[in-house]
Amino acid sequence: MKILGIGNAIVDVICKVDENFITKNNLTKSTMKLFFDENEFKNLLINLKIEKTMSGGSVANSIVGLSQLGDQVGFIGKVSDDEFGSKYEEGLKKENVDYFYFKKKEELPTGTCLILITPDSERTMCTFLGTAGKINSKDIDSNAVKQSEITFLEGYLWDEGDPKKAFDKAIKYSNKIAMTLSDLFCVERHKKNFLDLVKNKLDIIFANEQEILALIDGKSIDEAISFAKSLNKNIVITRGAKGSVAINNQDVVEFSAQENLNIVDLTGAGDLFAAGYLHGVINNLSFKECLAHGTDMSSKIIQQIGARLDKSK
Image (cartoon, rainbow, N blue to C red):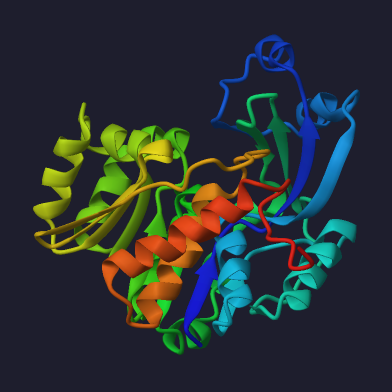
């Protein structure tokens, strides 16, 4: 197996809203808010029209993208034996992703992420992790980890307690480790731990400009590049309309964003960028070619609704 993803197994529920909905519900646009109360989460959904429901989760989206590019991939993520859990498993299998998890009835339901799309195509996420956030070391198939060239982890999954133990086990048995910092909220919540992971445990790191600057308390992309050059790592920074940059040891490679796109939804842009980039890595392409594949995948996904490419198009 080329890449094994380990992340939150979340069902995405996509809705279009106006700016007022974001303000009224005290949400911060284009970030993710974690809900710990299932009823509070359900109340948000009451008057909304659902555009689309699909299997999601950041690293799972990347893994599906890699499968669509023809790479052999697998995924570990915790679901419950309920309607959403069954749909989640079916969604992965339909995309030729090996699912290394046996679902059973859990105390909490399968996780859900409400993705709110405003008229400017920005997405604001409200996540009720459900049982996904209860992943533990027993849920990690060490043989699957050992047999994959790269283990791909997500910052969204990291938390003190059982999830940290799951992370530690995955890292222990990995041949090479990639991770996405996921979201500004995650970075600020776990800054010290994420900095330790970036400096001491990871081989490939994905972050957008906002996230990497928050991690290092920096103010400019130059500071982020200097930080990355000081580490013996491959750090990939996405910059929206300004393109992307990959730093590998002392080498810095930049790539421009595609222009004149019909952007409808930015959900999954980072996930599919990571898929394209990792596809390049496992196929021994140059860093420029890796960035080109990442840019191509992210450009495709933002011109449709949802974070999984529609193969019929």
